Image (cartoon, rainbow, N blue to C red; front, side, top):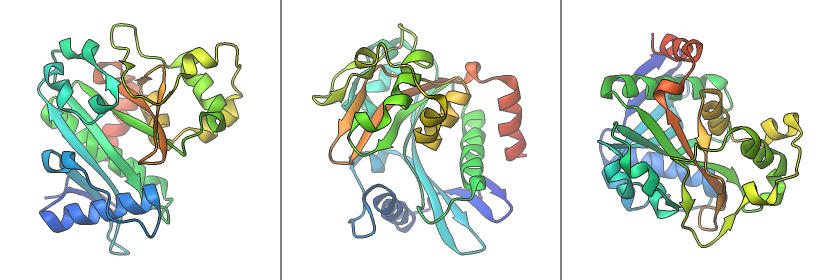
Length: 245
């Protein structure tokens, strides 16, 4: 049974090791390039894996994984907790869902892919009564200088509220909130350089950490990203649920 079927795209949970392996191969292609070995880690065994397929082409075009937590008391079990000090979220008493390893095939740019991926996530969030989404939103490469406008915009408008703000844990970070105190972002440049997934989170009321982690293994800069479901504007919820249909 698919999570969501819209037009040529179907989103479904992985059904066995072959599906998970396909998601790992897509992640490797998206994150590391055509010659990279499959991308996998110890968290894969604990997660649900969502696949978005193009039925017209018979191709896997998007994948991500979900780790469900009953509350913030289990936050240290998450992938994100390897990189961020999340003790402030440990007191969160609602159901949480970590969204990780989100990727779209580099040869497929149809915006409906992202819509279907979010629609499937919306269906799961509603069914499981999830109250907070979180994860790591990644910029390609490890140079913070390449994204100064994007990071300045995050500092100016989208930092986490103090009671949830992640602390520094990783050894290698780009402390953009401190570095860009006086940098005025160019809005067009900032939005163009922002990862599409992060743009979607922010449009729904999401927030981010005040620093980016430099992840040499993944060749990314990433910011912790949180989204409380109650913060999503009603019009945006309506659009998401219209995709679910």
